[in-house]
Amino acid sequence: MNPKILVGFALVTAIVTAAALITVANRYWISAAASSVRPFPGLLDHINDVVEIDVKAKAGTTVIKRAQSGWVMTDKNDYPVQAELARRAAIGFGEMELVERKTTQPDRYARLGVEDLDGENAKSRLVTLKDAKGDTMAELIVGKRREGRLSGQGGVYVRRPGDAQSWFAPVNFEIQDNPVFWLEQRIIHINPKRVAQITTVQPDGETLAIFKADPKTPHFAFKNLPENKKLKGEAVADDMNSILSTVDLADVALQSDVDFSQKAWHADVKTFDGLDVKVDLVTRNGKTWAHFTAAAEKPLADRETQPDEVKKFFKPANEVADEAAEINAHVGKWAYEIQGEPAEKLTAQLAIFLENETPPKGDNTGGFGPTGPGGEPGESPPPSTGEGQ
Image 1 (tube, helix red, strand yellow):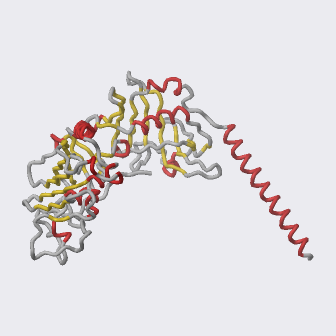
Image 2: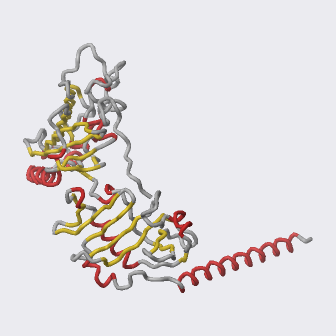
Image 3: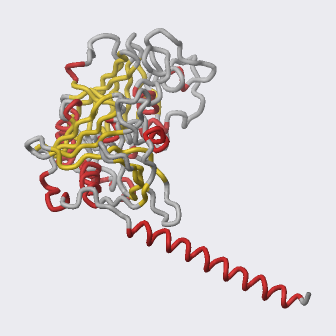
């Protein structure tokens, strides 16, 4: 056959195939749109009346309420919730459309995660929106998430309680039964370029103290380094300046509910512009808990004499005072479970920076790295067990 004819035949075939696919896709979405259902058609008109979101799962119920200060979690002693997550969930229910009918067979619900919660291994979540009187404004069983197919938009499988029909609903919000997902997770953030001095004290009294004498000094120096000890390198402690740059919670409790009086680690972080943050840490029941306090002190370097590339990171005295007050207002009555690198750095000991030495294990000294505080001294901080989608 003539090559030109072959090419022409292939081109026609491709065009016909593409047209067929487009037709099928259009029919699919036209059909879906035609059968779409708004489960809560009047909710958006009364969205400001939503003051409570309950997420009930097999393991328990997470209750989020709107207070004068914003959204809070009641079973975490009214700790602040990320307002945007709560807002998106409430509005998302009002805007939701059920676009694709799924199974009506109860024995198949588990595949979509929309089974009744009384099932032995139920993974579903019953989400309820309530008003100030406690009346239900919307309620839906939320199941597994499905990523976008033809439309590129993901969503979740859902089912209305008492209704056999399950659905797929494209949504741009997320519902999780892990309480930590909803909480304001950032505890504190201090720009690493501001950090001048770090001191950690082990439960047995061993102290690590590192410092920079000047903001332009490239590396941290060690105070009271034993003469017979050698550092692994001159830059070995430089990444310690991020000790308070990203500290997020893994859980939260009232400070009064955590005993900080026995076998505690202590850390003190000072900035060149005068912020002083003190941290107490303990291990209790397999978790590392921390309590933070802040104060404004005399600056360790004159901000106005610094070059612009340094000066821009430092704050004037009035802003440092405001920052300390803001930190204390946020963290004052709370104890935070922390994990990973923040916990390791806040309990760092000298041995991990020295050649041919490793921190001792199991002696209540903790350490930076694999011997840091986990549930018990000498363990690494345990990984988060929070489940997400």
